[in-house]
Structure formats: C-alpha cells, structure tokens
Image 1 (tube, one colour):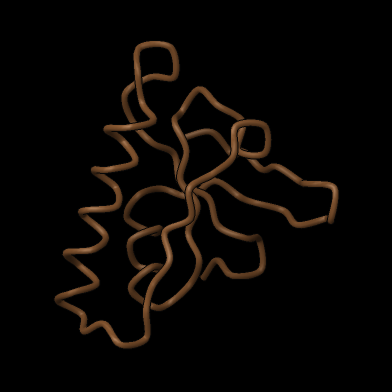
Image 2 (cartoon, rainbow, N blue to C red):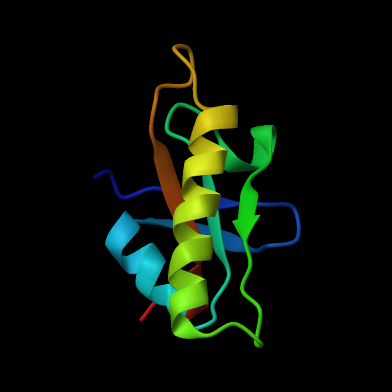
Length: 94
C-alpha cells in the first residue's frame, strides 16, 4: 500500500489506511472514507461510512459489510479498478 495523503482547500488532510484499520476505526466510531483505487478522493468525491450510536456491535458489523459491498458494486469498474481504498483524517488514526 502506498503512503498517500490528500489535503483539501480547508486544510483537512486524509491519509490512506488499509481495510483492517478502517474497519476498527469504524467500529470505534470514527469517520472512514472510501473510494475506488484509481481515483482522487477530492476530485471524485468520497463515500463516507458513518456509524450510528444506537447500533450494537453486531449491527455495525453487518452495516460495514453492506456499505463496503455497495460502494464497491456501484463505484468500482474497469476504469477505476475493482477494489476500494480507505482514508481517515490525519488526527484520528490510532
């Protein structure tokens, strides 16, 4: 995995993380961003994988799998490649 980061006009910086870390951050309640591997997250727009406080851990797990599969199905193609890359804000990574 390449060490990628992107900064937008507000100064918010997204750092690329792997799927395992993205999943842990999502379970812990942090915002995770996903986009196809051959795209720039600020130009194409990223999909946010939000979490809800009312969800149990089992529901979060099911929702994570559903969201990742949905984003992959609708946004990934031959031009953008068939898998996702994940990002998190620089200060939130643990």
